[in-house]
Image (cartoon, rainbow, N blue to C red; front, side, top):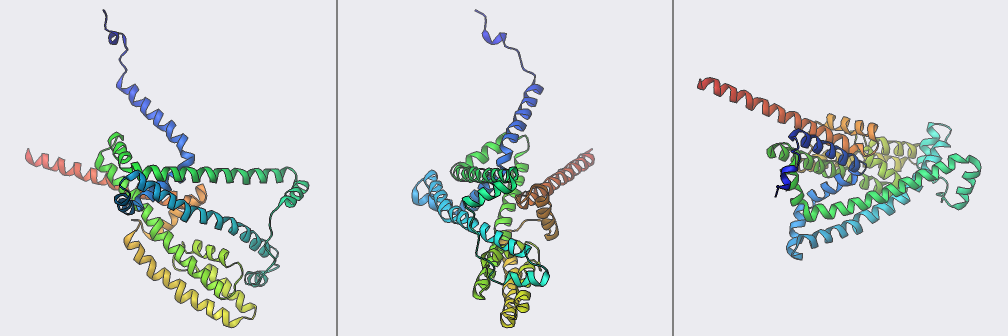
Length: 353
């Protein structure tokens, strides 16, 4: 009887290689729309690794520990953030409406520290009014909001699922990728270290400093009776990404607005808190945190990468920009090291002859 395997056509190695490349590209294109929650989940798994080891000893299993940490992440982080963002959007819209109605710079600065109108609650009557006034534009707006909400829910679901998977099976996934990627394991480990370093640097070195400055500013705004304190606090946290003078772009106008409104005492206190408290957090906390979790990029390059990513792909570019630049720097370093190794090997072989 003839061997069935003899009838099989032998596939050329080049065809197999191109098939692997094409399928990998196709898979990457399918996954790309969800890169944000996947990258965040990976960084979360990296940051939670020490805690994961401790919880694993208590729960006697990595899967149980991963489930515990994922539930804690969902209850203590994601749910409060979702509720806060929902409230923040309404307050931000109200602040924007107040500023747009101002007739000049002086009136706008005074409006920042004034009570303004009561926050507007968007309800069914507003949807009907928008539909009558703007027609198709209102329908498009509702569709856009609905699409963004659905995408946010999907992203949150993928993030939670991926966080659990990477916590429970992260080592196995890492080993599989290291074994199957067409690069040397030592080079892959350098890329992986750069990836993890960028996550720690952005989340801890940059993100935590911004959060602390935002919280400090929010407390100051609340203590001084500034309306929309939470909105201004978030704006302060965002502005802290700009080195040295970033937070002053928010608390400075607040202090000026208080002075223009005749509240000289509160204006002086606001300026003092901005310079000596919020500024102190910038000058002391950021170096302390970046020593523990620093992106190996010059400050100017990091800032340009963040703003370049923001201009290219939107808000998520604040993460993607520094990540791609850091990986590019690592790629150039790997190539340089390889070139030096080849030069040394050539020199050694020449001396032997």
